[in-house]
Length: 489
Image (cartoon, rainbow, N blue to C red; front, side, top):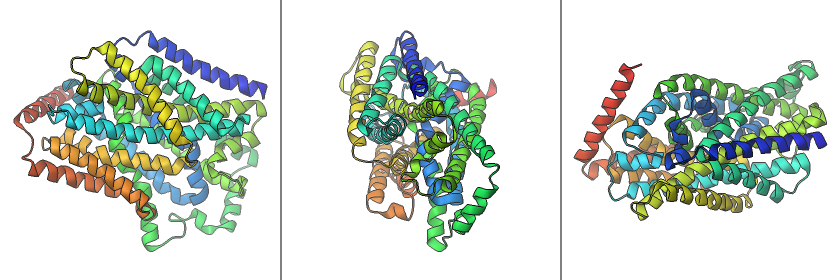
């Protein structure tokens, strides 16, 4: 146990060290919110995907595969497909657009894209981002409490307090630069742990054959694409898995990674790195869940299957490494959610209500926001213990609120202030009502949320007279910058 504790403490110290190092390089609001647009292709890709996949990758997804078996393949398709399309359709365009419109956050880009002098879009988008990022962060904090309780016997509350203190330390100090470089480290740790653990366990078992045979005898439906369901139930399983892909176009924290890359030309390489990272890690997570159903048929909490596998099949002194891997998944996301939410506070709320505020004061306000947002997330994490469902709800909210607006803003001139606000509010209301009415048991809330949000954007823009002349001119400037970028590659 002593060696495990030392390994885990070393992991924590590395994160704090990254925070201290990047603090010295954080001089402006651009540095704090976007790492000064200095991230290379590896940092961008792995930071984006480790923050996207989060503790859900090591707890929620294996837990889902443990319960659902091969039918979780639809989630895999949604994850990999959504990741790849988001990088291809959004990555390069939003990087160029953010520079053309001189925006330091995605929400600030929305405001400038529709030429909203009143700041309504920025305020509404900022509030929605803060709301869903806090929910996302609380889901991950739940995972940290579970982890430290299982690993070191700490109470659930003590575990989440430790996780929050670490996140506050390096995010408060180094901002997005600290988040990016710490996520490169944590994403690499997650990748190799997820890859090697199931391989080592299968070797120890002498192959996967006995597990397959035993699971099939217990439940043949475990190896069916729809878990033995037919009709509407089967459609619901497929739509729910594929629906995860709809969320990606609204993943503001991932888009922030796109905006932070130093050269838009590197997006192409980052796309390949990110897709391979997601494909391998998510496949391994599902494999761990299905293998866990054979090894631990009576486990109390399926979301603990990864850690249980590590504890039972590896030497005790490696527990610290497994704890670090799971905590890496948790903290990589919490820090990204918190820094994106704090950027929304600075660029949308503070700038809107306090005119002509200087960079130093904005950075100070964002640092204070980091602490406040973490504390609110802590309070919410006391109320639930299921990572998977909360993470899916928050992802659906982001996809519905911002997915249509991101795509319309980047691909067409036909969007204005009224349409943008209508889209965000409609997406938010649809997802929340759909989830709490129980309709999400039939169709994942991201799908109707995305559809109704798109309809609201189109109708809202049309009935309010369409885009104004200034926003059309600025969009043409963006299109020119996009063409020039292509011609220089």
